[in-house]
Amino acid sequence: MPLLLLDLDNTLLDRTGSFRAWGERFLDNVGAPAADIDWLLSVDADGLTDRWDVADAIRDRYRLAVPSIDLVDELHDGVVANTRLDPLVACALRIADDAGWVPVVVSNGAVRQQDAKIRRTGLDRYVADWVISEEAGVSKPNPRIFALAAQRARMSLRGAWVVGDSPEADIGGAAAVGLPSVWLHRGRTWSDTRFAPTRTVDGLIAAVATVLAG
Picture 1 (tube, one colour):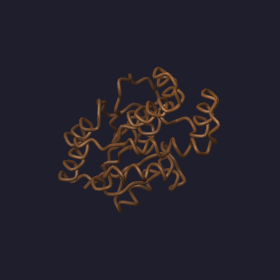
Picture 2 (cartoon, one colour):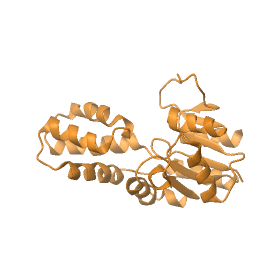
Picture 3 (tube, one colour):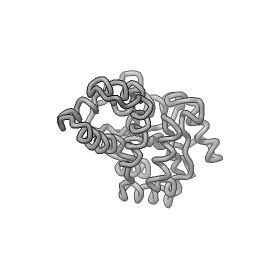
Picture 4 (tube, one colour):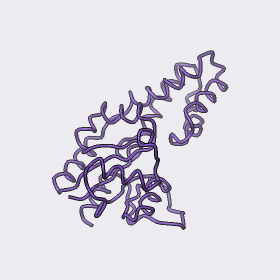
């Protein structure tokens, strides 16, 4: 029973779509042009920009009197509220489980938000466990977080695969720990010369099929 170590945002859950849905509603509420969603997505940078910096950028652009801490809460809670689990992703995880794989989420991020996404969407019913970097005290691509995931599942890393969309965090992390990996390209071309994914696919369902076939 090998481990299937899975990224959360834009791998198991459509984080970009969730942020866009929240952002479009937020911009409408503050009277901003609909086209500003492109600016907001750019500032957010797939969630890599610190939430306080995003909040400050929003306050400055729209001259809002709202305290930054309230905007940070809105950024956290708004994304969670708009996050959904694709039934086909749930089905793929069930198939992996039936085939003898043990799905475990390995995610960078804040416990408050990532844990809420996993539980609120019902993803917790389809994975054996999850490790979030804030709680673990270590982030991908550090090999220690993958080792912690294996410990949490009471399993060995031997035979495990890593699946994710981040070249550095997921594929770089897999390379650092010596595991095969599947990269979700999301329309991008691989460019890193330090390491490379074992397989490249367009989504989680194809990734699971690739692992099971491999």
